[in-house]
Length: 389
Image (cartoon, rainbow, N blue to C red):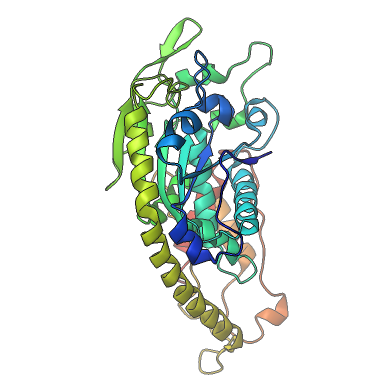
């Protein structure tokens, strides 16, 4: 199963959402990285100890543990998948998590996420997607954005991995690396987009970044799979700590005295305990926000699309009222001037008249190209340069 609960004993289903928030501290959702399943990520091979159930749960019996497994092997195979699988994976994860919580009558229950490696990138994209769901038919998906209280990022490559770490995913029996692994390199477009979309909402959460302090052995060399600068960027108000382990050993604790366990245990305990009051208030404010948003959307539908007057059928300089772009283009993007001019000519001049729609409606232009060729940056730059026309 993609989603599995490691604990039982929830309150009765007839409890209301707010009663659930008050009676149960919350859920801890675990997301694994690229190189191991969730169970392998949490299990010490030498002792067989699964620390989150064997060590942590006896200390915090009210916590509920969920794990989520995605098809990590597909991301590592050359010639399969897509260059940027984050949106597809995040959409699936979001839908399955919301469904599980809805069936349990617990959409309002607080969440604390524990993410290893790429699992952190997947969560960042899922939260950005959840935040954007404002329509009545999709607002249930927004519940994850609202209910999330804290995130522990353990070895997450926020700023990418070094080239030396690519050998970690290299299989000598298979020719080449997956395009996805290449897209995890430092400074990639995929990582920049994920960061740009997450940063505006990050202030809503408590964040704790952990980095690996021991290099991993890969063939005859050693390297950090995710170095400190990438795993623990200098974010305001984010907690940081190193764990004396390799990348794959960061969440393997054979005993309560193992390096890193005390810090992880304290953070989870603190977050789970303090989450309910904050999430209860957040849901109260969310209801007011959605009511106002639904009224605004209804008013927009009733508003006349065009105003008749002196500007009819005239070219006017106009700042778009409906400009909503989640992030800015990179200052390093340059060129593509000819393509931008062709795009402008394809769209045509902006005429504000009631005949504009009757001559064909909104125009659509498809931008295509190889992964990493700059399609997103091109569109962002075009939108910025043509907002005022």
